[in-house]
Figure (cartoon, rainbow, N blue to C red):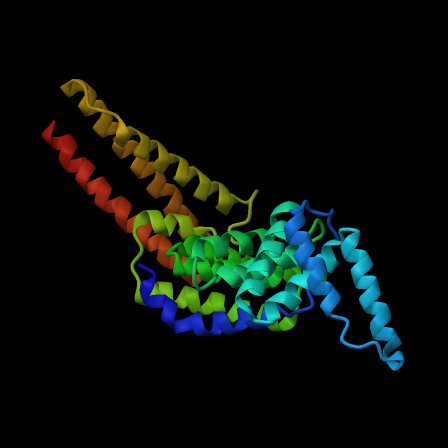
Length: 319
């Protein structure tokens, strides 16, 4: 369903993601990870080479280099990350492998956000599901707030993996970081996320026809204003409709018994389908704050329910 959309905004997402890696996002201080001795030795050996001169006029550089070595030997996460970055930038095969191994140690062993971001980019072209894992991990940020760029990058990859509902969710989260976590928001990233969310919403409406399951999965993420909000009448109507449809789906999985059982089952089908239809029609009429995409998805869901009602009516008349 979503394949046609990707080419229309993938380039924007790719560039934005690359730029976002250097953005000034807050980076949490975490505990030291456990690193294999051989890998740690490679990190120390490379750190030693970063002292480019012994000229007395560069005392500040020498002081910083000595501080890096001391922090590295003490297991500093940030020092290890600095060394991993330096190794990766040398663009030499073995050094790049070592940098990725260091990032894994930091991301897997210490939940280091910047290392998870680096792994996301490292795997983006060769293993999208693994890249997604690390962008999702990085998107959680620290205990105070999310990593905005990773929310976007996760959403972009989810779309490539044909999960439009989750893509909408992550891109919307990126676009609305400023509401709950203003310290973790950058205007450029927010602007790009809002544009991507609008573009994706429009393309879903004009270039695809989702099935009922896809439409249901996307509905709650199809409003950048988070409509319908929990604990509102509109949300209650949506929830009740989903409960009725879930019960209908569960009944569909049951095996038919006697003819009498089949008749009761057909009547139950009608009851739950009509109840779901009633709730969704009420939601559609009462809520003026639904987005254009949500109204589009509601029409798809209601249309499919009507088809099922017609089929159940025909089946019931035959029993």
